[in-house]
Amino acid sequence: MFRALRRKEQALPQEECEAILQRGETCVLALAGDDGYPYAVPVNYCYAEGKVYIHCAKEGHKIDAVRRDTKASLTVIDCAKVLPKEYSTHYQSVIAFGRMRILEEEGEMRRVLSLFAARLAPKESEVSRLREIDRWFSSVNILEFTPEHISGKQSLSCLPL
Image (cartoon, rainbow, N blue to C red; front, side, top):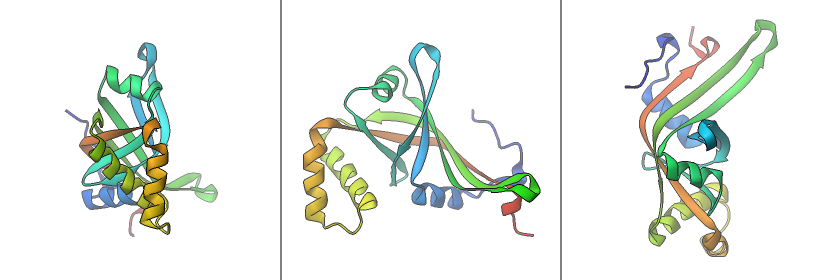
């Protein structure tokens, strides 16, 4: 169902793909947008328990797109360094294909927002993080991305000699 990586020698093992998802800060989420146009948007995210969570507004392009079609893909670029002398780029990246779900249950939403808060503000107290969650809760939606296929790739310059 999903295409195999063409340059197999550049494939990352699944453990490294998971590590990149865990440490990444921003992903590009791709959805079926308005009038059949692709909609790809950079978002911050939280990866936990094998799922990617994204927070967004109650209304907007992302929510409309997910309601229309739950299929999505996302990409995380772990490192990208231009190597001018080699006319190349040193990189590692992960792409995942899966399905989106809009979380509806308050307890589930608060649990995921706590994960976000701990990730984004690890030095803040739990009391402070919970206060922020309460402050923004009524205006936030949480999207859950469940991967069906994950693959990673690295430039040849990343490969051990």
